[in-house]
Image (cartoon, one colour):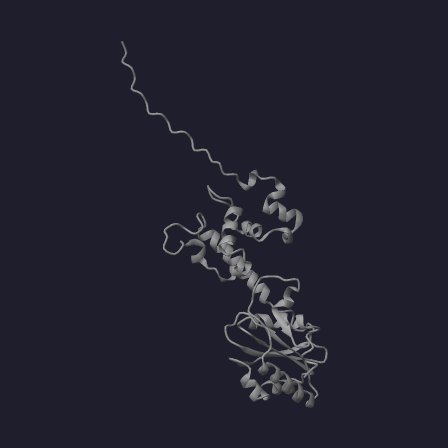
Length: 267
């Protein structure tokens, strides 16, 4: 009689994934399809980020990873400008577990490249010969120089008779006091380049846009001396530090205009 065959160990059951992938979602909810159908403006920050991440992991979808990143940044889009490769691929301080499981070099590089491209686009000024017709036009020219600084700088835009920028020049660094003491730093280039008007601008690294007594004094003196030379002082802008939050005033909440607020006319 044939001996019984030894019992074979049971094969382990196949692992069943409970993860729902983006491909299983309805088309109207998938970030890429939603963008094609409605346009990028209709996507949330996390949905846009998910498109750059491209694919998920065994545990999380691309949108899950994107939401984890945004949650880690308190859903503040402006904080994306501060992150680096180590933040995206590293561990929390004092822990061995990765901050974002499944986010490796390839995905991190894609995200960082997208952030840098957005930063450069934001900092690209309008075409040099575009007329400055309002404070917002001037702000868009000046913000790339001033919004990211941790110290004060004073700049001046020199305009032709049509309001186009002839020259954009750094006047002083470290505060406005030096410029107050020597107005030639501001007015000499205006005469050299035959400017018809000028716009002053400086930054407050603290983010507070209220003008100081020194700011008011500088503006008054420049306006008086410039008028003697038949040069108009069109405005003086104070810029805060860059932030991505949007108020009902949009970009106008990022700076203070002496002209818009009636301060220039009162001097």
